[in-house]
Image (cartoon, rainbow over all chains, first blue to last red; front, side, top):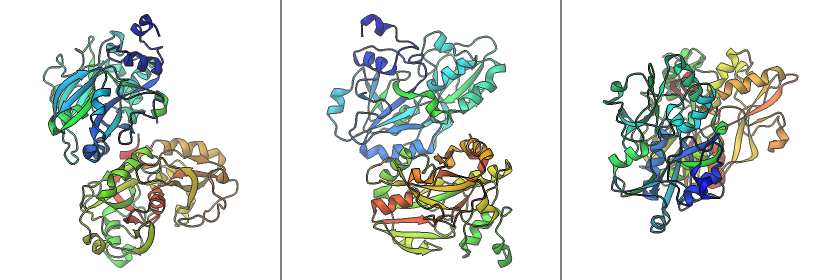
Length: 268
Length: 268
């Protein structure tokens, strides 16, 4: 793979090519890459926290729809054969006691210091963005090649053991005559957050300033757009911040794990 | 509630009335009771087995779609306010080391001998039977007021920790011109087993004699019926038999926990 090829990661890039580019050091958000293949959020926790987190995900399927949970110590997801969870995500975050301590593009060294890590892969709304676009619904952040805006909210997740959290949401601005189609189409994909959790009134879910997302890039809103909010797989990072496990690794928001699973696999 | 009322548990019985009847000692399968409300399979395990079982369910969402996982020691499911998991199922099974040792209609005494029990409630295909009937698809075992036939199969579940199992399926005989509708309608309910796992050839999934189910009642097949197989929430009982946890409690096949959740809550 040439450097030139790496720099034009796009809809036609295969998941394996994209993962190899990230393994070789390319760092960029993954929105718009590898059309038709599901992307995943990631959180890695020591085994001691795994039951509570698995229960948290079960109780909060909209923000935390699990695509795969690896065996203790495993670094090889079955939904991306040949991949390595330690190197194939463009950017990772390292957390100690709920505090973000580092952002890196490879966690092989960090992983080697532990022998009990459990990896959770969680569905991502990028999966239904191509179906939205194919239905004629513009997805502004993909058109502009930026990261989706994501917000902390006042929506409470169901607690599970040590994990409590508010929900993080992603936002897409959609014209009023297309909101219903966006609901309908994303609703076919419950494993990747499914239908929106809220439509139209940011302040009702505790979002004070729509122009200043807590994660990702500034929103792009066209004249008349309704802000539509989907549950977001960054929620586990909010759970880490509020629940303070001694150690965790996550992907950096918008910098996802690209799987080999066709989007359609997750369509009901 | 009069004895007479108890003996005519039917589509119009409310979930709370049905649970109270079972609490007072009524023992019968729950197919056809409390139209429009979801029923659940149950398995109770000591906490030491809970992570492996939760992971087993995550990896096998068709036979084990989780509706609720209770906190350790809790007997009060949120999907049936006011209920008691120890008394509100018509018949329970007690398992030691993978062997069925008793069938009872109340587990209050057994529960009291443990302080670390975790209850898993799993979706049940009874939930989509009323929508099938409303679409004009006859469900023979409900019309005959018998239990659905269930079979062990050669289909392997994904393993998780100590739990390995083959899949148990339920079977409904459906006319060839209605099979597609049955697939489509049940597919809208992924939380309660969703679309069938197999259609039309029992021997291909290891079912040697369709007339002799391993669980439930003998099948009713009308002329020309195609046997249609759905993943079944009795699968955890097969997992208990093959994986031999020291202790477990389940419902008896067909004798379900009737929740207060409308079927429509689980429709995608």
